[in-house]
Length: 147
Image (tube, helix red, strand yellow):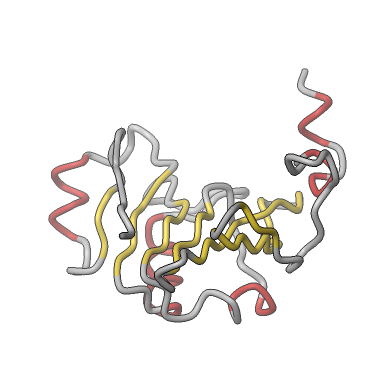
């Protein structure tokens, strides 16, 4: 149904100059540095992105992930912010469960983490009450500002 979604994912994304990016090849957009890193979305390779801002603050975005390989994890230690897939409480074949996401957060030790890509199986209030202090459920319109 969506043939474009099942090709080589590294070629599905294009930069402003229309050139595909490569794993761990740093891109720049003004003063912003972007590092694409490979992750596994079940059997399909996909990417997360680490952003380094002029202030030195770091944020990684990993919305479609089941496994973060060791080579990618090496770039994700001690981030300021991590946005990570946490689909539902029970395991899934292509997305991290809430428990898997919390384990990754504990290992990567970001200052603040946000759970994203959640299903209706997770109640906002109940889930929020069980999360560690540095973790919260991402909400529509969430803004993270680096000055």
